[in-house]
Length: 210
Image (cartoon, rainbow, N blue to C red; front, side, top):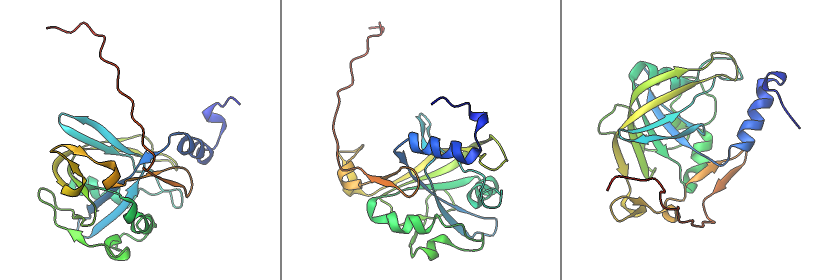
């Protein structure tokens, strides 16, 4: 089967994309609005950009239900700050509750029964039970489309990191067997990180200066 993207509606393209690009890490993004109300929502269009400076991105889509921007995007535009909370398996149920489309006045921390953790360098709180939290300052927002199925790329610099020492191996390695992160597949499907294997990366073949 060969597909020209313009021949399909955006929701069909969405299913193909999210069913193919798997598993996707989940960025559980906490933010605050102009009145200081907390918001918490998961985004599986999320990843690391680079390490110098430490930078992450997430991509909030335009809502398919009412064609409006997500509360998280509006909050980050206004405040210039957000927190990335890493989702471990034991937090999956609470994370799923926070994926509910709720009025902007509703605090998803309260809806999901989650304790807030005060941040060090930014105003939005983090999820206290999350074993890794990245406090971020907004670097830029690149808008792709305001149409249904469209979205934006939100890029933030990590300015502070909280790590539960139980997930650390040495000073700078994360043990996936302890962190037990989950990944997003398509539809209602998620995956666990339980079946690991290793491959040694081949040495560089570049003629580097001595």
